[in-house]
Image 1 (cartoon, rainbow, N blue to C red):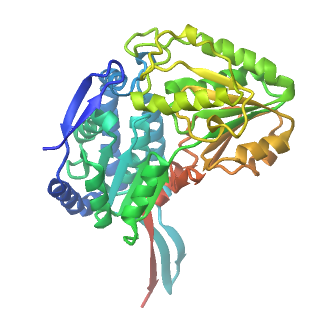
Image 2: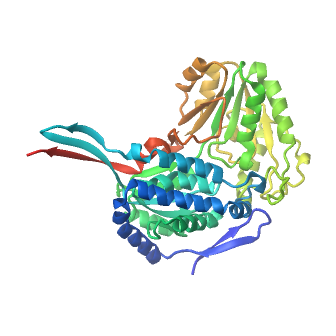
Image 3: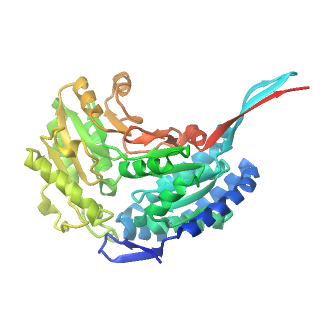
Length: 459
């Protein structure tokens, strides 16, 4: 029997291991889900919502245990307390708008005709979730999918196997039927075979560009709708009238929190000439105070990356940039815990250019380049000089200027005077190699359902 080992980044030991489901078992899971879907969809929105939210409440009761499990699985320091605050916020909002988002659109109800458009569930939604924010990214699809009347099959990342188990435990304890939400451990080959065999009615994947490409190839010819969120190289632009202290604090936190392992984390910062040197000085002061170490230590502010292999490319990006003329601003001697493995010292680079990978490849770690720009035109061109388009962060007191710049940026979300946040009332989406589709908001419900038209001529 094939097994997956979850290697803890804390010390390289095996945290847990799980058996990989065979293709036969996976097909039985799919069959059970599809058999359960009609009865689940026939329940009222109120009843489905009540059961799902009861499950979220159960998840909250496990938060102390989950916080420790996340530290062991992907290295996030326990001082940050897990992800339940975000999970709860998003779930409650999506529950609150469900009736409105799923309400039929009435075109005509006259003596002669009744015409309307209903939103009906796809059926079986397959959620493939990542390890970096393993609860919040999964919940983005799971909660609205279930409330909308779909059944869900979850395949979580091998680095966060316990997360899928906790979600299953919580939702079942809240009253969601077992066949309506099922967690499963799969390998890539079986996953591709199930997709190619048209096993699912909707697929939502959050992960790498390569992973998204593999899913699209597997689904070719099946006409299965797919939602993809594949990463980013999110820029920030600090203008001369910005609140510099707030900008530095927010953007450096956005670049370094979770050891930089965030799809919408800040990965490149453009600062006007007037504020550049002061911004860099303040940024270096903040990062120099971080404590890199064991995430189980409450004093630790920066834990290890989720796996040693993830740090290798980040080190390569940083070293290549330095060799090409970039200036490292953080003294690595401040972080003796950097052992060449999963524990990686943070870094800020100046004198960077777009010839360097650190400014155009996704980094996904605690390293950021800061570049001086002369005007809005140059900043816009640099922000758009990327294969990704997830978020962009603008810093100014002039909202009209921000709106004008925002309209010219190729991205899914534009922030003004904030960063690295998912607002559940707004559509979470991207463009270019960041992917397609959208989660959260009413649009999230629209993507997890299909329109069905009713054109009734009355006798």
